[in-house]
Image 1: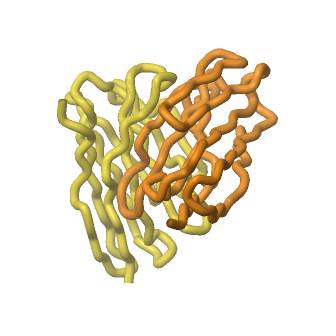
Image 2: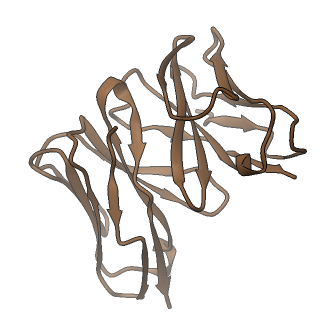
Length: 113
Length: 110
C-alpha cells in the first residue's frame, strides 16, 4: 500500500512569507501528526489531528497551524516565516492510538532566507 | 511534560562490535517505539514494545522495555556498516501523544 506522501519535498521562502505543507496519510489511517526536526532540538511535536479534530498540540507559537480534511489528508501552515523556522517538517500517520507505530513521510525541507 | 532521555548522543564503533543505546524517562508510556532515520528521510519504525519487561529481537537487534514501562534499550550485536544511522526512541503517552528522544547517531566504521 502507498506510504505517507508529503509535498513539496523542498521549499525556499523569504522571511515574512507564509507556507503551506501537505500530507497524505496511509489509507485507513485517521491520525496525522506533524513534527519539526532541527539538528539542535531533534524531533519536536507540532500537533496531531484525528478525524478532522486537533487532538494534541505542542509548544509552538500560533504562527504554526494545521487542519485535517474529511479524507484524512492534512495541511500545516506557517505564517510570517522566521529564519529559525528552517527545518525538516515531518508528517506521520497512524491508527487510532499509535501504539503500534507511526509511518512517516520523507518530509519537506523548508529553508527560510 | 513527558521527556525521554536518550544516550549516548553519538557513537562511533568498528564493524563487528556490540553496542547498547538507552532511553529513559520518569514517565510511564503505553508503548515505546524505536525508529531509524537516514539523512534527509523520515524515521522508519523498527519495533514497538508494549508490555513491561517485553523483549523483542529483530535479527541482530534486541529491544527491551523496562518493567515499569519508563525505559527501553536497544542492543546491536556484531554491528555492520549498514547499521549506520540515527536511532530514535519514542514513547506514546497520555492522549496518544508521541514524544521523541534526541536520538543516537551511530557510525559503524569498516
